[in-house]
Image 1 (cartoon, rainbow, N blue to C red):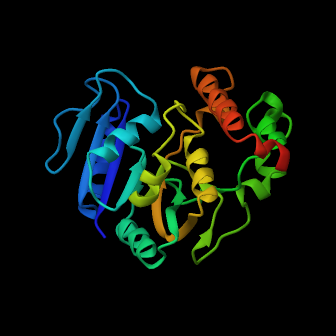
Image 2: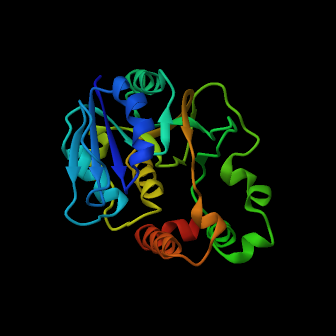
Length: 252
């Protein structure tokens, strides 16, 4: 199956200079959505550039990019998420062999090689309060919520996941269209959890494929600073998720 990739740029010219040469040869279609006017220079050969007249949220940008492609498999890619050689082919081969899978995520690693906890369980109310408030200064979520982050688990073979970070995901177009794409009501944060949750409810599997490796800087701004514009976006995302899926409050 052919593979397309959609990259959303917010003024990440330096990161794109690293990403596009690594990503381009691995996909059949490559779209860069410039969310900030003038955020990238000339479009490299083989890259389709979509320039927004005004900034949009992450989900809206990915949806825009997906509409510019026709491949059955589509990767949403952050500018700081660089696939190692063969990563795209590994994910595509897995989805080709597992028709019930709608989402496949790679093993994400920091630039120094440490594994990122990109495969996670659906959130709980208490866990979210600990992670997204100053309480995390008193109680380290990575120590108290090992189950949420699947810490200590290093699977060598593909395993099913609740959800995975949206910084790099391969999506089956059939599933994506069935779900109506990303919910554009999320501006930034939460849209990846929402998509995977809706996929689960629709009967689609989500898989973590560790043989596919992606180097990801992962700024984690909201983990270090609580009172920023991103904090507001994050809490808006959390509240929207709860309003859409109130059963999560009852079950968790």
